[in-house]
Image (cartoon, rainbow, N blue to C red; front, side, top):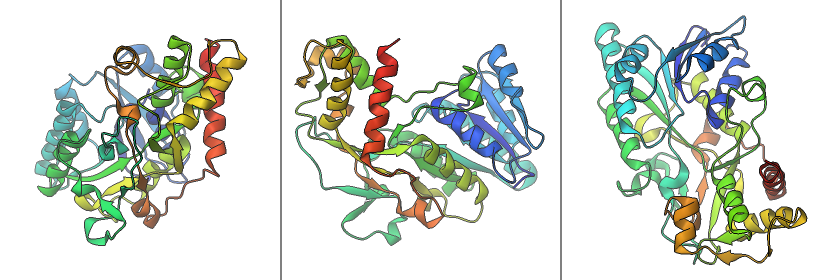
Length: 347
């Protein structure tokens, strides 16, 4: 695979930087990674991380730079989208670029797309648990008690963009693999983070921390009895590396879903850990967990009750291709929650 070229979006992001670092560390890394980057400063910084085996190159643009995306894709072997699971136009541009390559060379692009396990979330509103578990196995291999991803409604979160990718794979325009992580934990470390090039923190956990800081009390949606799967940042990046190394030899399209997992956390457990740290720093008026008001949900979560949903997954397909979680238990996850709370509280 050392002769392959990659076009990647989201290099400055929490997941993207870890994926880049993991690809660079492979025994046979890609010969070139080209990243879509918004600023000249970040572009120069990205290129400075080149190694003797891999040239890092930046093209300056954003999701509106559709012609640039198309032309860069057409000149690449592999595309990895890590910037957004919900913006369809740049995904369509990626597909158009692959069609252009297909017409000229007879070979489409291998496309590793990032979705998210929120595709499986319910409408529990923090008031109930769920026994529904989704597996990433191809539908033909799924048996109770697990559910296949393709049973999810087309209206599910992220699903509209996933369906665009799947349809392109079906038509032969791309060979697509869909990586689907749940809540990700772990502080981003390494040169891309340490230099300030990339964001080193996740999304969901900081949302809950910032809400507790803002209202000066831990909070949950509803009763907080719902639970979510979690996964470690390094494990997510390793899945992308495995997908890259195995492109062309593993299931793709509707047979190409790949979860990462590691365990599950209950929302009350999460906010209890947050409250303990904030209380020790005198930053909350009470450690008692209470329900978010409608106004607080608007303020801290853009009006969405997604932190009150259930999300149960199992990474069986990823395991079949050699991926395995390195998480040793929930204590490891909660330790990170406490450390991240202390870090954000000190800002």
